[in-house]
Length: 244
Ligand SMILES: NC(=O)c1ccc[n+]([C@@H]2O[C@H](COP(=O)([O-])OP(=O)(O)OC[C@H]3O[C@@H](n4cnc5c(N)ncnc54)[C@H](O)[C@@H]3O)[C@@H](O)[C@H]2O)c1
Figure 1 (cartoon, helix red, strand yellow):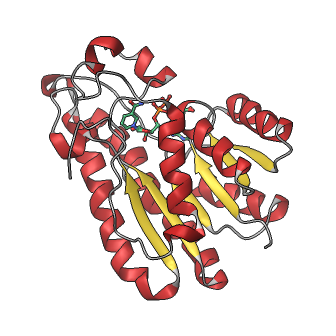
Figure 2: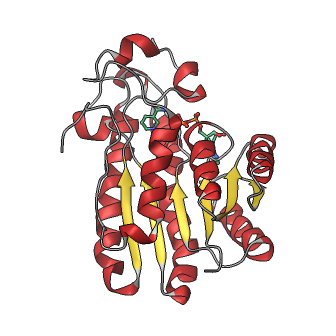
């Protein structure tokens, strides 16, 4: 089978990098998008070391213009896009009192409007191919609630709603749309936050944080042929933090 082409937003580090590597190991050509071009290029170099195929694009996943340029770059270098992983997000920890209207809008522009814009830009490729996989990275914060960022939890709740609605809308047209809400995963992003990762992990039944590879495995499954009859699903990868 000809290699599939995937786009992973926020692929310069953390979960996005692990997802990019796993998809590449599974034989998918990966377009790594990130505002951090240097990090995206590092991910691409790691994929090429595995003899995979990848390209990097530096841009803002909340900008329609940057997304259009990234799609064009991906078409030129890799071809028609049939897998989209909406992963890039801001994940701040702040009290409700500290969330200003400007901060709210900035976060929603990336975490919720970003996936909307990427879906708008890439679904036409999937429709033309008659096959597509969209995997949206949400958060267990939207399932359990969280006292560390109402804007973040609200944005990820929106991502879960977007996932279900697009799943219904495209169910007869070969495109599946699913969500993966991680629990606590040990990434640079989590370590940069004012959070005691080890202490946080004690809140999960497994008493340990997840690894980026745990999320990548779930995403790769949902992107595979084997997940052909799964759509609108929320596949939590959270050490038991939230039971569906
Ligand atoms: N790590 C966790 O514990 C955890 C838990 C729940 C959900 N998540 C979700 O998983 C995803 C990845 O999390 P992570 O911990 O790997 O994050 P991270 O902060 O380590 O990495 C995020 C990546 O997104 C990129 N990015 C940020 N803003 C961007 C923009 N405007 N345009 C393009 N790229 C941009 C960053 O440069 C970075 O490479 C996010 O959606 C996050 O909300 C993570």
